[in-house]
Image (cartoon, rainbow, N blue to C red; front, top):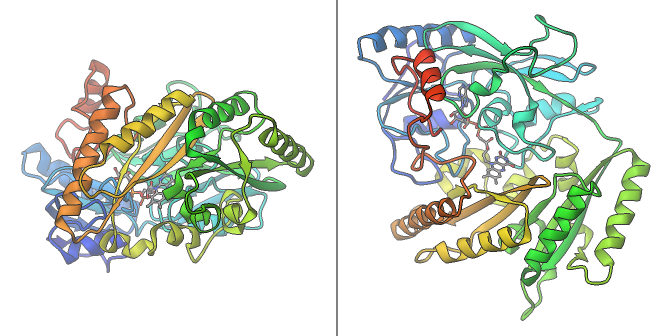
Length: 470
Ligand SMILES: Cc1cc2nc3c(=O)[nH]c(=O)nc-3n(C[C@H](O)[C@H](O)[C@H](O)COP(=O)(O)OP(=O)(O)OC[C@H]3O[C@@H](n4cnc5c(N)ncnc54)[C@H](O)[C@@H]3O)c2cc1C
Protein backbone atom coordinates (compact mmCIF):
# COMPACT_ATOMS: atom_id res chain seq x y z
CA UNK A 1 0.00 0.00 0.00
CA UNK A 2 1.26 3.49 -0.74
CA UNK A 3 0.07 7.04 -0.75
CA UNK A 4 -0.15 9.11 -3.89
CA UNK A 5 2.90 11.25 -4.63
CA UNK A 6 2.21 14.91 -4.08
CA UNK A 7 -0.43 14.43 -1.40
CA UNK A 8 0.39 15.58 2.08
CA UNK A 9 0.40 13.98 5.49
CA UNK A 10 -2.69 11.97 6.36
CA UNK A 11 -5.28 14.02 8.12
CA UNK A 12 -7.97 11.46 8.76
CA UNK A 13 -7.99 8.55 11.12
CA UNK A 14 -9.28 6.21 8.42
CA UNK A 15 -6.30 6.89 6.20
CA UNK A 16 -3.85 6.55 9.07
CA UNK A 17 -5.36 3.18 9.94
CA UNK A 18 -5.16 2.08 6.34
CA UNK A 19 -1.44 2.79 6.29
CA UNK A 20 -0.72 1.17 9.60
CA UNK A 21 -1.88 -2.26 8.44
CA UNK A 22 -2.34 -3.62 4.98
CA UNK A 23 -6.08 -3.50 5.28
CA UNK A 24 -8.28 -1.00 7.01
CA UNK A 25 -8.64 -1.62 10.73
CA UNK A 26 -12.26 -0.98 11.60
CA UNK A 27 -14.49 -1.54 14.59
CA UNK A 28 -16.68 -4.22 12.95
CA UNK A 29 -13.72 -6.59 12.57
CA UNK A 30 -15.01 -7.63 9.18
CA UNK A 31 -12.44 -9.49 7.08
CA UNK A 32 -9.78 -6.84 6.44
CA UNK A 33 -10.12 -5.73 2.83
CA UNK A 34 -6.82 -5.23 0.99
CA UNK A 35 -6.63 -1.75 -0.48
CA UNK A 36 -4.32 -0.90 -3.37
CA UNK A 37 -3.66 2.70 -2.41
CA UNK A 38 -4.90 5.55 -0.25
CA UNK A 39 -5.15 8.84 -2.13
CA UNK A 40 -5.67 12.10 -0.29
CA UNK A 41 -6.44 14.92 -2.68
CA UNK A 42 -6.30 18.45 -1.31
CA UNK A 43 -8.95 20.04 -3.51
CA UNK A 44 -11.66 19.32 -6.09
CA UNK A 45 -9.24 19.84 -9.04
CA UNK A 46 -7.05 17.08 -7.71
CA UNK A 47 -10.09 14.81 -7.39
CA UNK A 48 -10.89 15.47 -11.06
CA UNK A 49 -7.31 14.54 -12.06
CA UNK A 50 -7.43 11.31 -10.04
CA UNK A 51 -10.80 10.28 -11.49
CA UNK A 52 -9.70 11.10 -15.08
CA UNK A 53 -6.53 9.10 -14.60
CA UNK A 54 -8.49 6.15 -13.20
CA UNK A 55 -11.01 6.42 -16.07
CA UNK A 56 -8.18 6.23 -18.63
CA UNK A 57 -6.86 3.06 -17.07
CA UNK A 58 -10.37 1.65 -16.61
CA UNK A 59 -10.99 1.91 -20.35
CA UNK A 60 -8.32 -0.78 -20.81
CA UNK A 61 -9.48 -2.71 -17.75
CA UNK A 62 -6.26 -2.09 -15.80
CA UNK A 63 -7.34 -0.01 -12.87
CA UNK A 64 -8.05 -0.12 -9.17
CA UNK A 65 -11.59 1.23 -8.65
CA UNK A 66 -12.03 4.26 -6.38
CA UNK A 67 -13.77 4.06 -3.02
CA UNK A 68 -14.48 7.64 -1.85
CA UNK A 69 -14.91 8.39 1.86
CA UNK A 70 -15.30 11.71 3.65
CA UNK A 71 -14.05 10.99 7.18
CA UNK A 72 -14.46 7.21 7.06
CA UNK A 73 -16.18 6.93 10.44
CA UNK A 74 -19.01 4.68 9.30
CA UNK A 75 -18.59 2.59 12.44
CA UNK A 76 -20.22 -0.81 12.64
CA UNK A 77 -20.82 -0.96 8.88
CA UNK A 78 -17.19 -1.14 7.76
CA UNK A 79 -15.93 2.39 8.61
CA UNK A 80 -13.71 3.51 5.69
CA UNK A 81 -13.40 0.05 4.17
CA UNK A 82 -14.56 -0.87 0.65
CA UNK A 83 -16.76 -3.93 0.01
CA UNK A 84 -14.20 -5.77 -2.14
CA UNK A 85 -10.41 -6.15 -2.15
CA UNK A 86 -8.22 -4.17 -4.51
CA UNK A 87 -9.93 -0.76 -4.34
CA UNK A 88 -8.16 2.56 -3.98
CA UNK A 89 -9.47 4.55 -1.04
CA UNK A 90 -10.09 8.17 -1.97
CA UNK A 91 -9.88 9.89 1.39
CA UNK A 92 -11.48 13.34 1.04
CA UNK A 93 -10.92 14.56 4.59
CA UNK A 94 -8.43 17.21 3.39
CA UNK A 95 -11.24 18.92 1.50
CA UNK A 96 -12.39 20.56 4.69
CA UNK A 97 -13.60 24.05 3.81
CA UNK A 98 -16.90 25.55 4.83
CA UNK A 99 -17.26 27.48 1.58
CA UNK A 100 -20.30 29.56 2.51
CA UNK A 101 -22.94 30.04 5.16
CA UNK A 102 -26.13 31.99 4.48
CA UNK A 103 -28.16 32.38 7.67
CA UNK A 104 -31.06 34.16 6.05
CA UNK A 105 -31.57 31.65 3.26
CA UNK A 106 -30.68 28.75 5.58
CA UNK A 107 -27.82 26.84 3.99
CA UNK A 108 -24.11 26.07 4.24
CA UNK A 109 -21.83 24.86 1.46
CA UNK A 110 -19.46 22.28 2.91
CA UNK A 111 -16.73 19.99 1.64
CA UNK A 112 -16.47 16.30 2.65
CA UNK A 113 -13.96 16.87 5.46
CA UNK A 114 -16.18 19.36 7.32
CA UNK A 115 -17.25 17.71 10.55
CA UNK A 116 -20.59 18.18 12.25
CA UNK A 117 -18.81 19.61 15.30
CA UNK A 118 -17.10 22.23 13.19
CA UNK A 119 -20.24 23.34 11.37
CA UNK A 120 -22.23 23.38 14.64
CA UNK A 121 -19.48 25.58 16.12
CA UNK A 122 -19.66 27.99 13.18
CA UNK A 123 -23.42 28.33 13.73
CA UNK A 124 -23.28 28.69 17.53
CA UNK A 125 -25.07 31.88 18.61
CA UNK A 126 -26.74 32.36 15.22
CA UNK A 127 -30.34 32.06 14.16
CA UNK A 128 -29.66 28.69 12.47
CA UNK A 129 -28.55 25.27 13.64
CA UNK A 130 -27.33 22.02 12.14
CA UNK A 131 -29.41 18.86 12.41
CA UNK A 132 -26.76 16.95 14.41
CA UNK A 133 -26.65 13.15 14.53
CA UNK A 134 -25.96 11.12 17.67
CA UNK A 135 -22.54 10.11 16.30
CA UNK A 136 -19.21 11.76 17.05
CA UNK A 137 -18.67 15.48 16.45
CA UNK A 138 -15.78 14.37 14.20
CA UNK A 139 -18.03 12.65 11.64
CA UNK A 140 -18.57 14.27 8.26
CA UNK A 141 -21.76 16.19 7.49
CA UNK A 142 -21.52 15.26 3.81
CA UNK A 143 -20.52 11.61 4.42
CA UNK A 144 -23.54 11.07 6.66
CA UNK A 145 -25.88 12.77 4.19
CA UNK A 146 -24.62 10.52 1.36
CA UNK A 147 -25.29 7.58 3.66
CA UNK A 148 -28.82 8.96 4.33
CA UNK A 149 -28.12 8.87 8.05
CA UNK A 150 -30.54 9.88 10.77
CA UNK A 151 -30.26 13.30 12.43
CA UNK A 152 -31.82 14.25 15.75
CA UNK A 153 -34.53 16.33 14.02
CA UNK A 154 -35.01 14.59 10.68
CA UNK A 155 -33.39 12.20 8.25
CA UNK A 156 -30.17 13.71 6.95
CA UNK A 157 -31.39 13.16 3.37
CA UNK A 158 -33.78 16.06 3.99
CA UNK A 159 -30.85 18.33 4.77
CA UNK A 160 -29.44 17.93 1.26
CA UNK A 161 -30.06 20.76 -1.22
CA UNK A 162 -27.31 20.32 -3.81
CA UNK A 163 -24.20 18.29 -4.68
CA UNK A 164 -20.96 19.12 -6.47
CA UNK A 165 -19.81 15.97 -8.23
CA UNK A 166 -16.99 14.41 -10.19
CA UNK A 167 -18.51 11.81 -12.50
CA UNK A 168 -16.74 8.62 -13.57
CA UNK A 169 -15.31 10.21 -16.74
CA UNK A 170 -13.92 13.13 -14.75
CA UNK A 171 -16.74 15.56 -15.60
CA UNK A 172 -17.09 18.18 -12.88
CA UNK A 173 -20.74 19.11 -12.38
CA UNK A 174 -23.51 19.99 -9.95
CA UNK A 175 -27.05 18.87 -9.25
CA UNK A 176 -29.87 20.09 -7.04
CA UNK A 177 -29.95 23.66 -5.78
CA UNK A 178 -26.91 25.95 -5.78
CA UNK A 179 -26.95 29.55 -4.57
CA UNK A 180 -25.26 31.09 -7.58
CA UNK A 181 -27.28 29.41 -10.29
CA UNK A 182 -30.93 29.35 -9.47
CA UNK A 183 -33.67 30.92 -7.41
CA UNK A 184 -32.86 32.81 -4.22
CA UNK A 185 -34.94 30.30 -2.25
CA UNK A 186 -33.38 26.99 -1.29
CA UNK A 187 -35.26 24.36 -3.28
CA UNK A 188 -33.62 20.93 -3.13
CA UNK A 189 -35.82 19.51 -5.89
CA UNK A 190 -35.57 22.61 -8.11
CA UNK A 191 -37.64 22.21 -11.25
CA UNK A 192 -37.59 19.14 -13.45
CA UNK A 193 -36.17 15.75 -12.45
CA UNK A 194 -34.79 15.74 -8.92
CA UNK A 195 -31.26 14.31 -9.13
CA UNK A 196 -29.64 14.69 -5.70
CA UNK A 197 -30.64 11.27 -4.51
CA UNK A 198 -29.26 9.47 -7.54
CA UNK A 199 -26.01 10.09 -5.67
CA UNK A 200 -26.95 9.23 -2.07
CA UNK A 201 -26.52 5.55 -1.08
CA UNK A 202 -25.09 5.28 -4.56
CA UNK A 203 -21.32 4.97 -5.35
CA UNK A 204 -21.82 6.49 -8.82
CA UNK A 205 -19.75 9.69 -8.39
CA UNK A 206 -17.45 11.50 -5.97
CA UNK A 207 -19.05 14.40 -4.10
CA UNK A 208 -16.63 17.28 -3.52
CA UNK A 209 -19.15 19.58 -1.81
CA UNK A 210 -22.79 19.83 -0.78
CA UNK A 211 -25.33 22.53 -0.05
CA UNK A 212 -26.68 21.60 3.37
CA UNK A 213 -29.93 23.03 4.68
CA UNK A 214 -29.85 24.56 8.15
CA UNK A 215 -32.75 24.51 10.60
CA UNK A 216 -34.12 27.68 12.18
CA UNK A 217 -32.81 27.80 15.76
CA UNK A 218 -35.76 27.25 18.13
CA UNK A 219 -36.34 29.58 21.08
CA UNK A 220 -36.72 26.60 23.39
CA UNK A 221 -35.47 23.01 23.36
CA UNK A 222 -36.83 20.66 25.99
CA UNK A 223 -36.16 16.92 26.17
CA UNK A 224 -38.66 15.04 28.33
CA UNK A 225 -37.40 11.71 29.68
CA UNK A 226 -39.96 8.99 30.38
CA UNK A 227 -39.47 5.35 31.30
CA UNK A 228 -41.59 2.25 30.96
CA UNK A 229 -41.19 -1.38 32.03
CA UNK A 230 -39.89 -3.73 29.34
CA UNK A 231 -43.13 -5.74 29.61
CA UNK A 232 -45.03 -2.61 28.51
CA UNK A 233 -43.08 -2.22 25.25
CA UNK A 234 -46.02 -2.77 22.84
CA UNK A 235 -48.34 -0.48 24.82
CA UNK A 236 -45.71 2.25 25.18
CA UNK A 237 -44.92 2.19 21.44
CA UNK A 238 -48.61 2.38 20.53
CA UNK A 239 -49.13 5.39 22.80
CA UNK A 240 -46.08 7.14 21.30
CA UNK A 241 -47.40 6.39 17.84
CA UNK A 242 -50.75 7.99 18.65
CA UNK A 243 -49.07 11.05 20.17
CA UNK A 244 -46.90 11.34 17.04
CA UNK A 245 -49.77 10.84 14.59
CA UNK A 246 -51.87 13.43 16.45
CA UNK A 247 -48.91 15.83 16.60
CA UNK A 248 -48.79 16.04 20.37
CA UNK A 249 -45.07 15.30 19.90
CA UNK A 250 -42.84 15.59 16.83
CA UNK A 251 -41.47 12.58 14.95
CA UNK A 252 -38.09 12.80 16.68
CA UNK A 253 -38.64 10.53 19.68
CA UNK A 254 -35.94 8.04 20.66
CA UNK A 255 -36.52 4.86 22.63
CA UNK A 256 -33.59 3.14 24.35
CA UNK A 257 -33.47 -0.37 25.74
CA UNK A 258 -31.73 -0.81 29.06
CA UNK A 259 -28.28 -1.35 27.52
CA UNK A 260 -28.54 1.82 25.43
CA UNK A 261 -30.16 3.76 28.28
CA UNK A 262 -27.05 3.28 30.45
CA UNK A 263 -25.48 6.14 28.53
CA UNK A 264 -28.08 8.35 30.19
CA UNK A 265 -27.57 6.99 33.70
CA UNK A 266 -30.64 4.75 33.78
CA UNK A 267 -28.95 1.65 35.13
CA UNK A 268 -27.24 3.47 37.94
CA UNK A 269 -30.24 5.18 39.42
CA UNK A 270 -33.50 3.73 38.19
CA UNK A 271 -32.97 0.03 38.26
CA UNK A 272 -33.44 -1.66 41.63
CA UNK A 273 -32.37 -5.26 42.31
CA UNK A 274 -35.25 -7.52 41.34
CA UNK A 275 -37.07 -4.81 39.43
CA UNK A 276 -37.97 -5.23 35.79
CA UNK A 277 -35.80 -3.65 33.12
CA UNK A 278 -36.92 -0.16 32.32
CA UNK A 279 -36.57 1.42 28.91
CA UNK A 280 -36.00 5.12 28.39
CA UNK A 281 -37.79 7.52 26.02
CA UNK A 282 -36.53 10.96 24.98
CA UNK A 283 -39.25 13.24 23.62
CA UNK A 284 -37.86 16.46 22.21
CA UNK A 285 -40.07 19.54 22.02
CA UNK A 286 -38.77 22.62 20.24
CA UNK A 287 -40.00 26.05 19.20
CA UNK A 288 -41.79 28.96 20.82
CA UNK A 289 -41.28 28.82 24.61
CA UNK A 290 -45.02 29.06 25.38
CA UNK A 291 -45.84 26.29 22.97
CA UNK A 292 -43.12 24.04 24.39
CA UNK A 293 -44.36 24.70 27.95
CA UNK A 294 -47.95 23.87 26.98
CA UNK A 295 -46.90 20.75 25.09
CA UNK A 296 -44.73 19.62 28.03
CA UNK A 297 -47.66 20.00 30.42
CA UNK A 298 -49.93 18.00 28.12
CA UNK A 299 -47.38 15.22 27.66
CA UNK A 300 -46.75 15.07 31.43
CA UNK A 301 -50.50 14.86 32.11
CA UNK A 302 -51.02 12.10 29.55
CA UNK A 303 -47.96 10.20 30.79
CA UNK A 304 -49.28 10.32 34.36
CA UNK A 305 -52.85 9.41 33.32
CA UNK A 306 -54.70 6.27 34.30
CA UNK A 307 -53.39 3.18 32.49
CA UNK A 308 -50.37 4.96 31.03
CA UNK A 309 -47.28 2.74 30.69
CA UNK A 310 -45.03 5.74 31.36
CA UNK A 311 -43.35 7.13 34.44
CA UNK A 312 -41.53 10.46 34.36
CA UNK A 313 -37.79 9.85 34.63
CA UNK A 314 -35.44 12.04 36.67
CA UNK A 315 -33.87 15.03 34.86
CA UNK A 316 -30.38 13.48 34.82
CA UNK A 317 -31.64 10.98 32.22
CA UNK A 318 -31.90 13.86 29.74
CA UNK A 319 -29.15 16.11 31.01
CA UNK A 320 -27.57 19.26 29.62
CA UNK A 321 -25.45 17.38 27.06
CA UNK A 322 -28.58 15.77 25.61
CA UNK A 323 -30.29 19.16 25.39
CA UNK A 324 -27.21 20.68 23.75
CA UNK A 325 -27.21 17.97 21.06
CA UNK A 326 -30.87 18.59 20.18
CA UNK A 327 -30.13 22.32 20.22
CA UNK A 328 -27.44 21.73 17.58
CA UNK A 329 -24.70 23.07 19.85
CA UNK A 330 -21.09 21.95 19.47
CA UNK A 331 -19.59 19.52 21.97
CA UNK A 332 -15.82 19.96 21.52
CA UNK A 333 -15.09 17.19 24.04
CA UNK A 334 -17.43 14.75 22.26
CA UNK A 335 -18.92 14.06 25.70
CA UNK A 336 -22.01 12.14 24.62
CA UNK A 337 -20.09 10.05 22.10
CA UNK A 338 -17.44 9.18 24.70
CA UNK A 339 -20.19 8.20 27.13
CA UNK A 340 -21.77 5.93 24.51
CA UNK A 341 -18.57 4.26 23.35
CA UNK A 342 -16.13 4.69 26.22
CA UNK A 343 -13.51 6.09 23.88
CA UNK A 344 -12.78 8.83 21.37
CA UNK A 345 -13.57 8.95 17.64
CA UNK A 346 -9.94 8.49 16.64
CA UNK A 347 -9.44 5.34 18.73
CA UNK A 348 -12.82 3.64 18.28
CA UNK A 349 -11.82 1.56 15.27
CA UNK A 350 -8.78 0.09 16.97
CA UNK A 351 -10.01 -0.07 20.57
CA UNK A 352 -13.60 -1.30 20.27
CA UNK A 353 -15.48 -4.15 18.63
CA UNK A 354 -18.81 -2.86 17.32
CA UNK A 355 -21.26 -4.01 14.67
CA UNK A 356 -24.48 -2.28 13.69
CA UNK A 357 -27.71 -3.63 12.31
CA UNK A 358 -30.24 -1.00 11.18
CA UNK A 359 -33.66 -2.39 10.23
CA UNK A 360 -36.71 -0.22 9.57
CA UNK A 361 -39.88 -1.46 11.24
CA UNK A 362 -43.52 -0.27 11.23
CA UNK A 363 -44.26 2.10 14.11
CA UNK A 364 -46.61 -0.34 15.84
CA UNK A 365 -46.34 -1.89 19.29
CA UNK A 366 -46.77 -5.41 17.91
CA UNK A 367 -44.06 -4.93 15.24
CA UNK A 368 -41.57 -3.44 17.70
CA UNK A 369 -42.24 -6.22 20.24
CA UNK A 370 -41.66 -8.79 17.48
CA UNK A 371 -38.41 -7.02 16.55
CA UNK A 372 -37.29 -7.28 20.19
CA UNK A 373 -38.01 -11.05 20.08
CA UNK A 374 -36.04 -11.45 16.84
CA UNK A 375 -33.09 -9.60 18.35
CA UNK A 376 -33.14 -11.69 21.54
CA UNK A 377 -33.29 -15.00 19.67
CA UNK A 378 -30.53 -14.05 17.21
CA UNK A 379 -27.85 -13.76 19.89
CA UNK A 380 -25.19 -16.34 19.25
CA UNK A 381 -22.68 -17.79 21.74
CA UNK A 382 -21.20 -15.24 24.07
CA UNK A 383 -22.60 -12.17 22.32
CA UNK A 384 -23.67 -9.68 24.97
CA UNK A 385 -27.15 -8.16 25.02
CA UNK A 386 -27.09 -5.46 22.34
CA UNK A 387 -27.89 -1.81 22.78
CA UNK A 388 -31.08 -0.95 20.91
CA UNK A 389 -32.00 2.63 20.06
CA UNK A 390 -35.16 3.28 18.09
CA UNK A 391 -35.58 6.47 16.13
CA UNK A 392 -39.09 7.56 15.22
CA UNK A 393 -38.92 8.68 11.58
CA UNK A 394 -42.60 9.50 11.07
CA UNK A 395 -45.98 8.34 12.35
CA UNK A 396 -45.61 5.06 10.45
CA UNK A 397 -41.93 4.23 10.63
CA UNK A 398 -39.37 3.56 13.35
CA UNK A 399 -35.80 2.52 12.69
CA UNK A 400 -33.79 0.34 15.03
CA UNK A 401 -30.09 0.77 15.72
CA UNK A 402 -28.97 -2.59 17.10
CA UNK A 403 -25.40 -2.28 18.38
CA UNK A 404 -23.41 -5.45 19.02
CA UNK A 405 -20.36 -4.78 21.18
CA UNK A 406 -17.58 -7.34 21.57
CA UNK A 407 -13.93 -7.52 22.67
CA UNK A 408 -12.11 -6.99 19.36
CA UNK A 409 -9.13 -9.18 20.20
CA UNK A 410 -11.17 -12.21 21.27
CA UNK A 411 -11.54 -14.29 18.08
CA UNK A 412 -14.42 -16.34 19.48
CA UNK A 413 -16.34 -13.26 20.55
CA UNK A 414 -15.75 -11.68 17.13
CA UNK A 415 -17.04 -14.84 15.41
CA UNK A 416 -20.10 -14.99 17.69
CA UNK A 417 -20.93 -11.32 16.99
CA UNK A 418 -20.69 -11.87 13.23
CA UNK A 419 -22.85 -14.98 13.39
CA UNK A 420 -25.38 -12.93 15.38
CA UNK A 421 -25.29 -10.24 12.68
CA UNK A 422 -25.94 -12.85 9.96
CA UNK A 423 -28.86 -14.23 11.94
CA UNK A 424 -30.30 -10.75 12.44
CA UNK A 425 -30.15 -10.14 8.69
CA UNK A 426 -31.87 -13.44 7.92
CA UNK A 427 -34.56 -13.07 10.60
CA UNK A 428 -35.53 -9.47 9.83
CA UNK A 429 -35.40 -9.78 6.05
CA UNK A 430 -37.60 -12.90 6.27
CA UNK A 431 -40.26 -10.75 7.96
CA UNK A 432 -39.91 -7.87 5.48
CA UNK A 433 -37.82 -5.54 7.65
CA UNK A 434 -34.85 -4.54 5.51
CA UNK A 435 -31.89 -2.69 7.03
CA UNK A 436 -31.87 0.83 5.62
CA UNK A 437 -28.06 0.85 5.55
CA UNK A 438 -26.16 -2.43 5.08
CA UNK A 439 -22.58 -3.22 6.10
CA UNK A 440 -19.69 -4.32 3.87
CA UNK A 441 -20.42 -8.02 4.40
CA UNK A 442 -24.12 -7.63 3.48
CA UNK A 443 -24.16 -5.35 0.42
CA UNK A 444 -27.38 -5.09 -1.54
CA UNK A 445 -27.59 -7.56 -4.41
CA UNK A 446 -26.31 -6.28 -7.77
CA UNK A 447 -28.60 -3.51 -9.04
CA UNK A 448 -31.81 -4.91 -10.31
CA UNK A 449 -34.47 -3.16 -12.31
CA UNK A 450 -33.86 -1.85 -15.78
CA UNK A 451 -33.76 1.82 -14.77
CA UNK A 452 -31.18 1.34 -12.03
CA UNK A 453 -29.01 -0.79 -14.37
CA UNK A 454 -29.21 1.79 -17.15
CA UNK A 455 -28.30 4.65 -14.86
CA UNK A 456 -25.31 2.65 -13.62
CA UNK A 457 -24.18 1.83 -17.17
CA UNK A 458 -24.49 5.43 -18.32
CA UNK A 459 -22.79 6.99 -15.31
CA UNK A 460 -19.98 4.50 -14.80
CA UNK A 461 -19.72 2.02 -17.71
CA UNK A 462 -16.14 0.94 -16.92
CA UNK A 463 -16.42 0.56 -13.16
CA UNK A 464 -14.26 3.54 -12.20
CA UNK A 465 -15.94 3.46 -8.78
CA UNK A 466 -15.67 0.46 -6.52
CA UNK A 467 -18.73 -1.58 -5.82
CA UNK A 468 -20.53 0.05 -2.88
CA UNK A 469 -22.83 -1.43 -0.26
CA UNK A 470 -25.92 -0.18 -2.08
C1 LIG B 1 -22.19 5.89 19.20
C2 LIG B 1 -22.59 6.06 17.76
C3 LIG B 1 -23.68 6.82 17.45
C4 LIG B 1 -24.09 6.98 16.12
N1 LIG B 1 -25.17 7.75 15.87
C5 LIG B 1 -25.60 7.92 14.60
C6 LIG B 1 -26.74 8.71 14.32
O1 LIG B 1 -27.38 9.27 15.22
N2 LIG B 1 -27.13 8.83 13.03
C7 LIG B 1 -26.44 8.24 12.01
O2 LIG B 1 -26.83 8.39 10.85
N3 LIG B 1 -25.36 7.48 12.26
C8 LIG B 1 -24.91 7.29 13.52
N4 LIG B 1 -23.80 6.52 13.77
C9 LIG B 1 -23.12 5.81 12.63
C10 LIG B 1 -21.91 6.50 11.91
O3 LIG B 1 -20.86 6.73 12.75
C11 LIG B 1 -22.31 7.77 11.16
O4 LIG B 1 -23.37 7.49 10.27
C12 LIG B 1 -21.19 8.52 10.44
O5 LIG B 1 -21.67 9.83 10.20
C13 LIG B 1 -20.73 7.96 9.09
O6 LIG B 1 -19.34 8.21 8.91
P1 LIG B 1 -18.75 9.51 8.17
O7 LIG B 1 -19.56 10.68 8.52
O8 LIG B 1 -17.29 9.53 8.47
O9 LIG B 1 -19.01 9.18 6.64
P2 LIG B 1 -18.06 8.34 5.67
O10 LIG B 1 -17.70 7.06 6.34
O11 LIG B 1 -16.94 9.16 5.18
O12 LIG B 1 -19.06 8.09 4.47
C14 LIG B 1 -20.09 7.16 4.51
C15 LIG B 1 -20.23 6.52 3.13
O13 LIG B 1 -20.70 7.49 2.19
C16 LIG B 1 -20.00 7.36 0.93
N5 LIG B 1 -19.23 8.59 0.75
C17 LIG B 1 -18.71 9.34 1.75
N6 LIG B 1 -18.14 10.44 1.26
C18 LIG B 1 -18.30 10.41 -0.08
C19 LIG B 1 -17.96 11.32 -1.12
N7 LIG B 1 -17.39 12.48 -0.85
N8 LIG B 1 -18.30 11.00 -2.39
C20 LIG B 1 -18.95 9.84 -2.65
N9 LIG B 1 -19.30 8.94 -1.70
C21 LIG B 1 -18.99 9.22 -0.40
C22 LIG B 1 -19.16 6.12 1.04
O14 LIG B 1 -19.94 5.02 0.60
C23 LIG B 1 -18.93 5.99 2.54
O15 LIG B 1 -18.73 4.66 2.95
C24 LIG B 1 -23.36 6.34 15.08
C25 LIG B 1 -22.25 5.58 15.40
C26 LIG B 1 -21.87 5.42 16.72
C27 LIG B 1 -20.67 4.58 17.03
